[in-house]
Length: 498
Image (cartoon, rainbow, N blue to C red; front, side):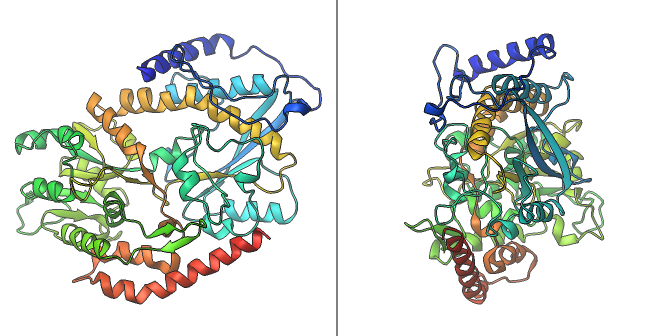
């Protein structure tokens, strides 16, 4: 298989990296891009024999020791969500770290550059970028703002349209085509996902299940249900109905008891996207349209509400509030054996590495067996995507650097993430590795969640906490607000286009 050959390439590269990490040197010459190929298209060069991806870098390109600067966010409580995929100071035996280190050294040697990074708190990074751009300061080459904050800055004219960078070939396989297609407005694309990063993969929704409980409750082969297209909302609800237990014996279900399903509020959105539903779609002119109000979406939402409000078998952490449970209470509950199923973002698998609970991983269920595809939400709360400030001095140069980094990431970083870091380190069986591929194959970047036009997506998610929620009434109340918010953003984008 291609993946196996690529994995072999990765292992060989990482074993050799320690020997050559100190080798190579920089040139002090000015940046050189051969004039006849300065805007060369980037393409993937692959063969069945070696399965190595290579960006089409103009021969003789030399950037004279240029310092390529990443600027990315962190949160003191979310250490696992820091962009560990951008820089690595040294080899340390961790496959992902060592793959990042090797990738950067390879690209530095290829282009005669230096790759550096700067961290900033997630709540402050957008403002700092905006201030630097307003002052005309070429401070960073590529920046990461969490999707939750990104809309504040995307229509402000501070980022380049990826379609205008001549040396970036957006159709190349190292750029996430889902992000290219779904995140643009009026054919202007200001942020993107690529193989450079794993933070966007870690922000993708999935489901974990307790293997011991699945066996003791006589559940069918869950992996087979997924393969056969029978993993649906109604099926998972059927399977967890008998898994709840009043462990503490107080006659009421609470945080010390066992549930069929453990989640947070975002289950509403994750399940909705899994059914193929979207808050926002786009028209033939690449403009967002509030497309939620359909009979199918109303029906689907009713089914999801029925699932997520049956608190005798379904635990929603937000139902109890932060005064009762901590932010990661439902994760701990699953680790402690208090749940059959557990809604997660993939980065939460890392939390469970030391857990004694044996678990498997599954995609978000479809709505029905007739639905062709499983879909997985990319959470705006934990994902940051790459943007390019308009103040960079040479877009063609930065485009070439990013193409080289992304192609080399497809060779090194992504195999380390998929086949070594997750499947070998955190995921506990081969079937879950197969499920991981399904989860990441069709990811959803819903502009309705990222922008929350008219606050509709936020209100939708909150319905699981309300008694007798009425989706038709909610839609009627917020539809005009959502449309007005969309019109405002579109006008801002079109103003940027001149």
